Length: 448
Image (cartoon, rainbow, N blue to C red; front, top):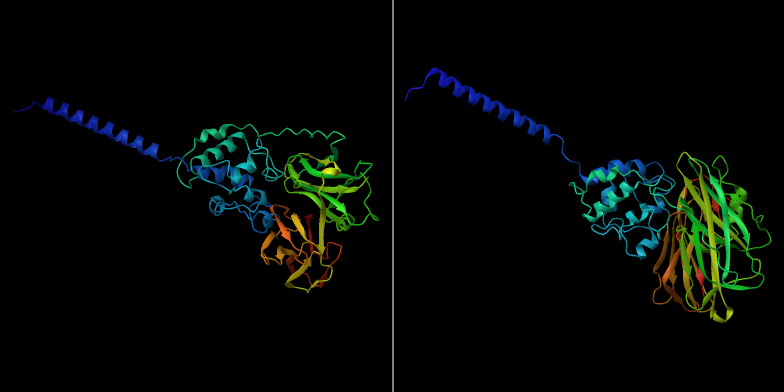
């Protein structure tokens, strides 16, 4: 069969036209594929963790001041492996069975508990400490990532969630004081924390009771960005700080205020810790005896990494019971080694044994040492649990406080052992003493 020249030309033009359409379509498809969707984890790292958490002084380096407290780096090279199914150093979180991130379960994920300001935290200050709270979009994005299994690769959460820039806000309202018949309230009244600073303060308050009372429950409350809130008694009442006067631990040039520091060495721990919004109840039948007009030192520490003034403010309610309901009186543990020294430019571990002269039940433990201290361990001395480590702290500024879910039962002649490691980086011999250049070695706590 023969075709005319016109038919042949027309057919060729159709083929060329079809080929050009095909090329155009393929080119468009190539452009669309050139912009792949980012992994959800990469977005969390780049848009949330790196700019707000992995910052100097927080979670960026092992030399950050707070690293010894949390042992958590959140840089791009380390964050994922440091989060997934890793047990936190936070004592309350460990007791509750939380891990830093538990894939599929945001409620059991410590990370979520620390960033969601709308959840009443049981595990210390909201993060980022001293900084601006995460937005509702950022919090929800992390929550959904955890629910979807917290994968390292793959896009599992809609990125448009991050467009919700509303800040997660907390409304602070001072808790109501107990009725006079039920107890009393003490407070660190509102004070200013200047931009890009931290401030640690003390206030010596006198309890309002005119007769001896017995306290069986302590409830504490603090504003956001309060790193810790601690209640102290005094070993000696002859040299007390001025009453109702705000005392700073740090001078304006960030050096330690020697007067305030020396006053701290007269302390006996009575309650509190890094969770500023908490309640501690003594075991049934156990209470703390508080004589009339007792001097108590309230201590709070705040961080401000913002460019505006923040407010510090803390309250403590002490609830009382009738003496008739008190079977055992809570006693303070104050085991101190006053006779040790650390040679210049050396690391040394000091082990000290302390015993009770009667059978006791230990219910709370904490520690006290100064800036050369690297690790403070407490072990059980004697009995079937001899040598068991029941407490460990690596942060001299913010010692862990452990309220023992299972009290330690000790017989007469048994006790506790402190194992304290110091690293003396100075060129002089360091001994026990009251100044910031000296060292200490004390076990605090409660027993009955």
